[in-house]
Image (cartoon, rainbow, N blue to C red; front, side, top):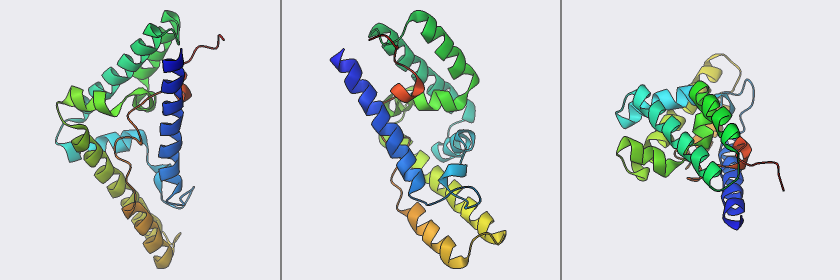
Length: 178
């Protein structure tokens, strides 16, 4: 049980850190920043950065997510019925699969190092964010000074695949029994 709680705390920390990286760009609706980068676009761009097909990357993410779900069942955090529902969500929703996947497992499934996976996702994230900033600037919704400040924040990002290699509670992998 203590191991499950530690796992869930790590997951929440990962989600908060990823959100913090997005918030660090001070981007909201119409600001052209991290809040506007979809998981699908990030995965597509990252596949290109990594030199793998999008389908291979998606399959690795889904497989990793399913392994996380299986581990939650094995540790008693969720029931088999809950796992079946979660696995259906993983198959239908890339965002869910991404949140439940772990960096190490995705890298392993692709036959690359975690460092390579992190670098690919970091470069893809920065490229997408900078393109959004440029589009927002071109649309006149941002001044040149604001765009420069936004790009400096993007350049400072260090989040690779995810802030941490854990998946957890925010994705609903905890039973409600106490």
